[in-house]
Image 1 (cartoon, rainbow, N blue to C red):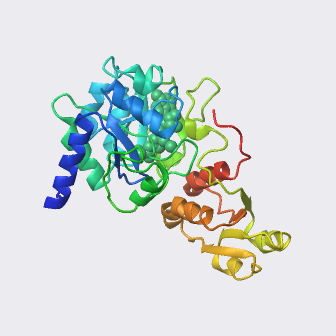
Image 2: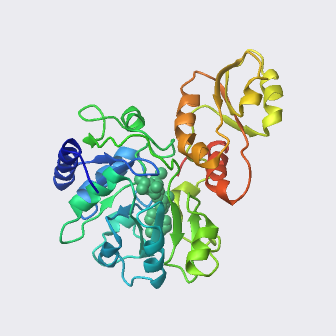
Length: 336
Ligand code: TXA
Ligand code: MG
């Protein structure tokens, strides 16, 4: 990957921050991550503290290539090699049995670890520069406070977690807006049969085609994924998901209540004047997903009391978007 001199210098500075046990927010193609040296227990502890994330929620480890898998997984599942070959670098996290090297502080005490190799050029350059002969990895949950909307720009990270000395993060490696926009697909390869733990840009069909066998839904015995909490990825303003043609009427039933709307253009045109913020929903899934979190941030910042979102199409390609919208609109429960 070819970097400019200026990018090289920023990556080198980010490596230094990680080496001294600091926190670097880094770009990936999905969302920004909050990075720390996975081998450094104290540094990883700062990630949990910065996010207010319960320490039993496992973190994933970011690696520069499939060559590092055997340094973190033991045994390495055969399917991990097949999937890495096909989808890495890219938006796929594989949960595999963890090697002794991988500390319990990363995995929340679980016997497995999530491994991911993002394709973003600057993020990737950081993992490559940091890795070294011991194949060091970078833990990286999404760089948002627990339960809140994931960041897809450097500014989102700064607005939520903040930069030191006032905020939590030592450095944000700005790599522009994330192109995929929703978190990676997670497949569990540490279970007897492969399981889909989180929907993302790599669909179940793509995974099944690559490995030539079914990828089933998680069972009650499967490990918990924090993104599986019902209310997650949530704006502060209450969100209602509704069929597009019902939205103008729903808003007119709340006269005097400022509302924010994400819907197709023709629906926006029919909304009454208390729709104070109107964002046009992209028609195609890749654009919809790429702008989803920035749109949720904007709807939430509009000063509205209610958010209305037109339900997007169904179907496998939209599974990740529908999953995140379902969580954003779920009734709020205390996040545990
Ligand atoms: O796209 C992404 O995956 C982003 C970027 C930054 O790489 N990262 C991300 O991390 O979304 P996080 O921590 O917000 O979500 C990772 C999910 C969590 O819900 C966690 O519970 C689950 O992966 N997870 C991690 N390790 C696991 C394990 N050993 N078993 C089951 N689930 C695991
Ligand atoms: Mg997250």
